[in-house]
Amino acid sequence: MYREVILDHYKNPRGHGVIEDADAEAEGFNPLCGDEVSIYVSFADDGETIEDIKFSGRGCAISQAATSMLVDMTKGRKAKELAELPKDELLEEIGIPLTPIRLKCALLGLGVLKVALHRAKGTPLPQEWAGLDELELK
Amino acid sequence: MAVTATPKLDAQKLRADFPIFEQPIHGKPLSFLDSAASSQKPRRVLDALRSFYETSYANVHRGVYELAERATAGYEGARETVGRFLNAPSSREVVFTRNATEGINLVAYAWGLNNLGPGDVVLVTELEHHSNFVPWQYIAHRTGADFRMLPLDDQGELRLDALDETAGDGRVKVVAAGLVSNSLGTVNPVDKLAAWAHDRGAIMVCDAAQGAPHRVVDVQTLGADFVAITAHKLCGPSGVGALWGRLELLQEMEPFNLGGHMISRVRLEDTSWGEVPAKFEAGTQAIAEAVGFAAAIDYISEIGLEAIEQHEHELAAYALDRLAELPWVKTYGPPADRRAGIISFNVEDIHPHDVAQILDGEGIAIRAGHHCCQPLMTKLGVAATNRASFYLYTVTDEIDRLVDGLHKVRKILT
Image: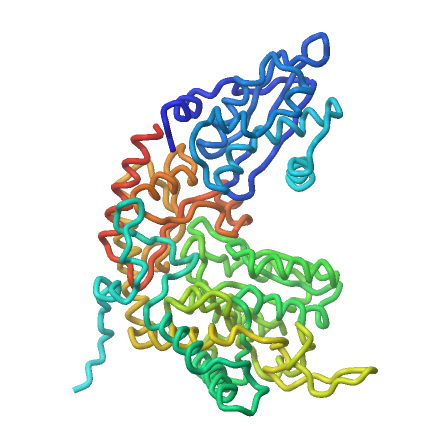
């Protein structure tokens, strides 16, 4: 489960930090193991393309590495496209079998990103992520 | 000649009573260090369930036929076993519930809704399991009562010196505390809390889910007015527990669940309630599980609660010594001589879920998370901890494997 690429992202997270005055941001919490992830996005001049994305938080290796991988995957892509990004695309990147409990860790960052985009751009937020917003997001 | 010293239990031998240990986990022998969450089941309990279903099963209290009478005798016999286990003055004071949480909810609703109001205080503790925290918080908010928390000291023990200050000039009506903390293993002085509560005119509600499997619980010396326990933590089936309460309080209380069996007479205009404990046992109960509960009580009673407590105390001391060898492990809670067989710890810079996952690969089962004690985690300044917990079938070899496993965790993740 802790294969090399996961450990690499965990020990050297990409885009770890905070963007002051971010165009979009959200914070999420996984009550099962206490993972916390905040995501900050700034858009290019077109207001659609992600110019910079950073995350902060603490938690298990899976939640932090998955969010780091998400950062790698999303830079330069458009908000609308990411709002529709299927879970499987991230899970394929993670590339390890995950139990239902660890799936929640792995997908926390993706959910937080979708909430952030929904808030800033009004992109659609399917029900499964809305729960995260309503329950845990400040 | 009678031997008065507590006989030591032989955990290695007792393991043979538990079929779960016969299988490898991830190719390794099972090291089960999560008995505080739920215990494993001895063959004797499994046999009792099976035999009851095969030979004596029907619904209870209704039929006049042979099987219904056997089933009723099994179920009511189980109530007597629970009553003796807790040294209850009468088995009528034993109400079967789904678990300890339901027992506490029963008191919070059935006693709390009618007896709490503005100006009253409900006092819980900072290390309370959510089971004895959330129901009281909810009922306090619904009735307008104040909800307050008795703080811990730095060793994770209750600050009895802060009782008067925490209560202030409020009318304390309920003091709710666990007997043994499921996170830190702290053994709470429930008798002292009960004496203080009674001085103030309050009732004392004790969550003994984590106490009753591991030490003698005698409701007549504990001093509490309500004591909730659960079967699954003491080698019994899941889905059944018991609430003991003082008869006069149970008789005054309104019912909790309503429906069949808990009634005396039902008319369109109104319904009168049945006698205690039937008043609190609406609908078909967990009949076979109650019988299994009694079999589990017989099993642990024959081993001896004193012997179990002593065994777990030795394991806790051994584990604390072994973990102290690891400078990158931090343990929480009181010293070994004042704790039950539960140890919460963290590995420097490694999240408990990762620790638990890597240990799982070694066949070692520990708990990682907030242990249903979020206020306590806040006090400790952590989001979660790892927890190793012991029972009558735990051997020191399992603790050695835990320590080896923690070295492996460090090697992989740092």
